[in-house]
Length: 468
Image 1 (spheres, helix red, strand yellow):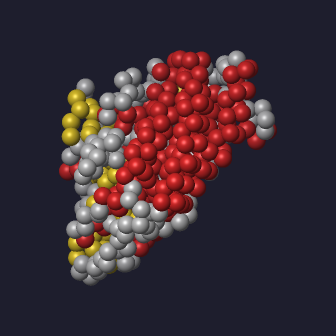
Image 2 (cartoon, helix red, strand yellow):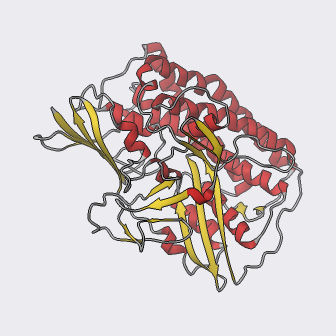
Image 3 (cartoon, rainbow, N blue to C red):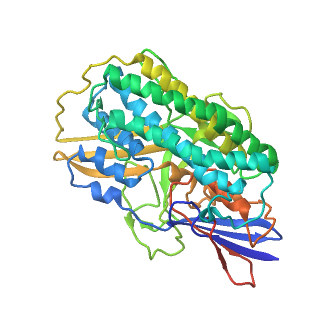
C-alpha cells in the first residue's frame, strides 16, 4: 500500500519548510524538501553601500546572524584586499564560537530531545507519536536537562554580547576583526562563563546524547544519504596557531581531497528561479524569482560540488578533521553536534589564551570604485558562502549559499536529489499515521528553515502532520 506523508512545519520554530514523502509498503520511496518562503536578500543588497552587507545580511537569520556577519566581512576583506590582524581574527572567531555553542545546545535539547524523550512537564511539548523507549529514570533526567539547558544556551549568547554588543545581530564583527577592543575584564568574564558551559556539556549533554543513541540503535543505520562531505574550513590557518579544527576539505568516493571553489555550481532546474542558464558559478549570475515556473517546487536552489550533492555541518567537519570515526547516519549527525560543542569550547580556550587586551584591530578603510570578493566560512550548520561585486563604490551583485541550501536542496537536472531528500529514501516507517522517523532524520541536519510534513498514499487522501 502506498501513502504520501506531508510534515508541515518540520522544525519547532515556524512554518516555512515542508516535506512531501511518498511511502510504499511502509518504506519511503520518494521525498521532496520544499522551502516555502522567498527572502530576496541578494536583491536587497544591490545598490547599497558595501559595509552595509555586514549588518543587513545578519537579518537573514535570527539564529545564525553572526555567521552571516563573518561571511560578509571576509568577502569585503577579499574585495578591499585587507588582511586582518591575528588579534582581530581571534576576537571575531571567539564571537563565532559563541554562536556555535548557543545553537548546538539549544538545537539538541529544544529541537531534538523531544523526539526521543517524553516531555510530561508541559502540555505544549506533547508529542504526536508513542515511540519513547528510555527507562523512566533516564527519561526524567534528560527531560530535566531540557530546562537546565535554557540558561546555559543563554550564557553563550551573553558571551557573544560581551564582544559583539548584543545577540542576535551583533555589532562587533566587521572587516579587520571586531569593532571593539578586548579588555582584561572581558577576557575574564568570557572565561568564567565558558567554564559553566564546559561543565554542562561534559556532565549532561554528551552523556545524554549517548544515552539516547543506546536506546534508538537503528538510527545508526538510517538517514545517511550520499555520504559526500564538504567543509570550507573552520578555525583554520592561523598565522601562529595553525589549524585548530578543520582545513577546507571534501570527502567523496572514500577519498579526502582539498576543497576547490571553482567546482561549486548552483542549479535551479527545480527551484522557483529563472536565469539565462540553469547551471552557473555562484559569482556569475543572480537568478530572478518566478513562482510560476513549471516543474519547480522550492525556493531553495541546488548547490553542487563537482556535479554532486554534498552534506555540510558538524558531522562533516568531525569526519574531515579526523575527530570522528563512525559512519554517516541520523544518529551520528546528532552525536556529532554534542561532540562538536565540546570541540568548540577547547578552541575558545585556546583563542582566549592568546588575547592581548587593549589592542585596536581597526583601521580606516576606503571602498574601491570596483572590486569583487568572496567569503567562505564554515558556520554552525555547515558551509556558508557570500559572493559580492562592487561598482561605483556600491554593491552591484550579491550571492549567498547557506548551509541549509546544501543540505535541503531540490533535485537537479542529473537526477540527484538533495542531501536530506536522499537521506529519507528507503527509511522504514513503522506507522505512516505517526511518522516519527521522518522528523528525527530531517532534524538531525538542524534545518535552519522554518518547516512542515505531508504523507501521500496513492488512492488515499493526503495527510498533513504537525510534528511539534
